[in-house]
Length: 262
Image 1 (cartoon, one colour):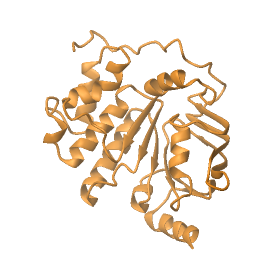
Image 2 (cartoon, helix red, strand yellow):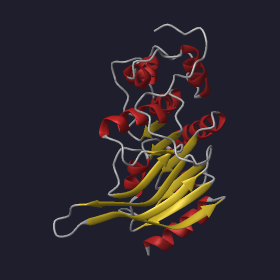
Image 3 (tube, one colour):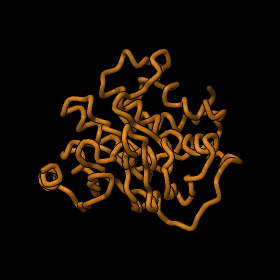
């Protein structure tokens, strides 16, 4: 891989959907998701509507089975709603074909998962650049160096995932999620596999780096301490957003969650 002479943002792919008039980074309009059940349909999402501002940090919480993961998957384009609309950066992705959706997701959405999902035989640098390489574009090595420095991994470009600690591996996953300069970054229990100290450090890196880059961050978590790092918390129950907490604290989030679980 060779570094380009200048920082250039690649043009949007020809599969780009037509933009809609919206200043929000993410908008869900009456999103419903049903799955076939043994006796009757399972209503995972029941008419969820929300709007997230560019550069915001939102945590999503709820009891088991409340629809958290389904909400993330539909919002991120990993799953298709049964009905309703999902707009990412002003683009309606709800009706895209699977191929167009995959292309849009690759260029505009970043993911950080609990399991890291790093390719073991690739170096740190190649893991970070992988989505761009798969898209047929030349990785911007200066941008990579900046990102790796931001997440505290300068000098580790040549290491393999097996040589990293859990916290370091998750930082690689964060850099990979941010490398394509996505509109949205989704994180599903990003600190769940880490000890408390490392999890706190990794969450701080994710939050601060996304903020520096103007990324819109959505974190699904069961941890009230993680949720308290967000600007707002959305609480789900039975497939619906039932509460919103602005300027959350861990105690306030824990109390509201306790009320949902009773």
